Amino acid sequence: MIDIKKIREQFPILQQKVNGKPLVYFDNGATSQKPEVVIDAIGNFYKTGNSNIHRGVHTLSRLATEQFEQSRKTIATHFHIKNEQQIIFTSGTTDSINKVAQGLAKHHLKSGDEIILSTYEHHSNILPWQLWAQKNGGVLKVIPLLEDNSLDYVAFENLFSEKTKLVAITHVSNTLGLITNLQKIKELTQKYNVPFLLDGAQSAPHMRIDLNQIEPDFFVCSAHKMYGPTGAGILYLSEKWLGTLPLASTGGGTIKTVTFEKTEYAEGALRFEPGTPHIAGAIGFATAIKFMDEVGMNHLYEHESYLVNHAQKALKQIREVELYGANDHKAGVISFNVKGQHPFDVGTLLDKYGIAVRTGHHCTQPLMQCLGVQGTVRISFAVYNTIEEVDFFIEKLKKVITMLQ
Amino acid sequence: MKIEDVEKEILEEFEFFGDDWEAKYEHLIDLGKSLPLIEAQFKTEENIIQGCQSRVWLNSELKDGKMIFTADSDAIITKGMVALMIRVLSGQKPEDIVNAKMDFVDKIGLKEHLSPTRANGLVSMINRMKKEAILNIEK
Image 1 (tube, rainbow over the protein chains, first blue to last red):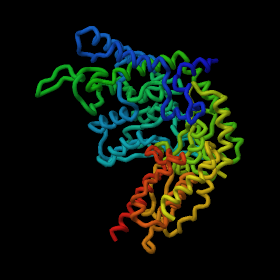
Image 2 (image 1 turned 180 degrees about the vertical axis):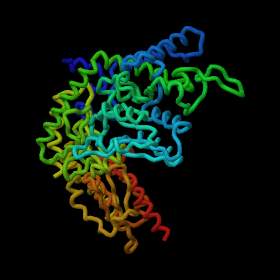
Image 3 (image 1 turned 45 degrees about the horizontal axis):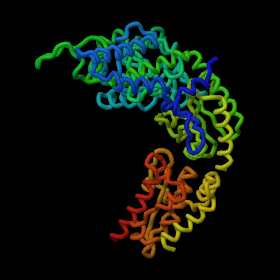
């Protein structure tokens, strides 16, 4: 078991009050809070280590380069990747997906080609593909939901055709917390020989991810949902794509030699990292990863599952509450509505009690249309949340329901 | 009643609750429930003010030199706020509406609903009310 009290002490922001009440932060799906080690790592880099990387001959530049490249290794090891060059630093999940979409659009995707997405997708994993489709006469096909809001894998298989060029799918629904069946996705994409992109924005913060075993072509996630800083994230490329994915953008740092006629590009990750990268962000991200590994990803998942199950059980007892995608196998997220009440009202009143939740469509409007609602109230957990906080939330939710009636 | 007088009346009404935010919000919710609904024919796409989350419908007309506003929202707290705006601005002369400061919202401790990060469409609603008023001055 992990000592939550000790973990909480490492997060300065959790010690403060909001609206005069202790902060209960249940909006981790949007962004998680940062432990002191991450804040210090970023601060210390600027205080004592700041220098540009990969070019300088001086000591600080060399040390900064080492720290930056060590961060890449730490992150690669966390995701069970041997060759850290397959980890490319980006500004986050959205940036990573756009890099893949723009790269693939240059050679791999042709007019009339098809891409399979799921109903769960965040707008960030819809829009880059939609833009390509609209410009190039491409087609987006969508995996529908079953009655219990899980993905319909039978229908999924029927979506494949000779024109299918990519499956781009989320690992965890950011709205429902439901986990997609990777075994099934791997099996079908291998069977039809179609590359797949796995969006790990909502899974990487909550569970152990072994990319060596999952074998996606592309994997993306954001540091800021994983106890790290905003503006940092990664794009993982399989060996095949590391050498062949066309560049979405280019510039200094990505090259071996340049003449006005011709450029020879660098090999490995650097090819995809034009300009000065977010060095402090990469270092902060690696520090956050170390924090998660120290807690242990399995411990973290167990603790959050305990909170989810406890909260779901209590929510089921409240007659006025409608749960969406209630399931024991989830990644830290619960979506619900109070029957007859607007999620905005529920969220506004909970905020007055110091409880931070997310309300609205969660950037998944197609999923909302599928559920037949305008929006939901979403609570999402991190390792520092406690059973006492869940109980406090349930007590106040009941009060809110009475107030609204 | 003049705009300032209605604002003063609302201020006194809310002063009664002091720091008790629960009572304040219960009152706001009651106000929302009592707002006369906009007539169905005016609940059109044109009259909708799109917030990110809650939506507001607003209809305005000029009657005997005064602006008459009716409105609705799908969120009850927003509707309560809408009811307050209507109480202050409906039945007033267009030029008075344009000059109204609306700072009573801050004074009754509900300023948070007018911050641009709030996705409720209230700021856009006030802007729309003033815009309609300007159009009617020009007439």
